[in-house]
Image (tube, rainbow, N blue to C red; front, side, top):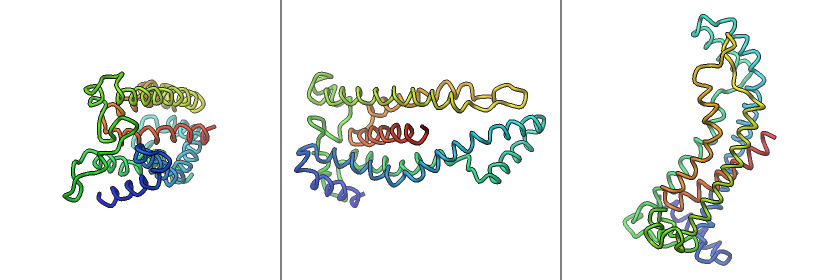
Length: 237
């Protein structure tokens, strides 16, 4: 973790002439953008996989009609179809999974008072008036929502809400263009009705994350979510 801390410190030093006391916050945003840039090929592959899976739906529907009374045979046939068409059912999860280590590193880094037996100097950095190691509850206890740190969170929540609304509309449109598959008898596959209703609201969970994690980790989540929204709008256009 000390190596990662040094990386953030070096990035902050490079950005300090431009961003002053918020240089470390800018470094986290830049670091997140670099992570997302590295993961972008996987996102492109996931988008191609999603389109390919959509094209396979008529064949999968036919398999469901053919093997309606034999779930095990149906599962094997669907897997064989994916393998034959070289489409991975799990490709859409890879971009998110690859980002988890970076998020947890930031979370742990800005939740630790010491690094390598020495004081964690990164905790002295701020985004305007809000400490990067602080949380929303800390800002509420130090001046309330209208305090200097509280206003940083107000602006952050407003920005996240805007991104969440955009993602909500994008998800609704994508799901309308690519409807969930139906079972062999024409009824919807069990559980998919609930999933269809919940998925558009997933983007709003970012608000909860921003409220409970250290500000540094929240910046990672907000930057990554913004990147995802723009990326999905481009790849699924």
